[in-house]
Length: 199
Image (cartoon, rainbow, N blue to C red; front, side, top):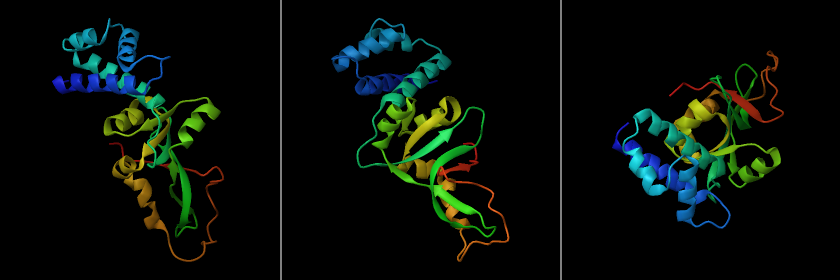
């Protein structure tokens, strides 16, 4: 990785320190605390050592910091999000969906349904599990290829990188359902499956 990777890693650390709640620690105290969790003496030591680390190790530290950030970050107010679920070693993605119509084979066409971000913290609490908040390209790539799990993706990012899920609407035909075909899927839980092209 280049010098910019080290700079991104420092930014990831600062981002995590901004959103973390550690007692009544100040921002600088949170920086030091997180650095110590990673085996460094303080922020200055973290930056100094980072300059001499191999690229793959910088990448691992950066990805771990990003993951922790996405686990605790709060959704931005007045921003639409889409809920996606990725499972390890499965190329499929599931998403919280809404009905868009019927296709020519009498099957439901489902597209992602936008959600208010404030439902993510409630989900974290009620399900007692990780719900990632993803708002950057780097976070999205790391979630899709390394972390997996339940994720809220900002609308802007989602429509840029997952547009095929929204383009399913093109399959909708006018009129009533074609009864010649049996229904193949049950969407009573509002989750639809999508087979994305791997980026």
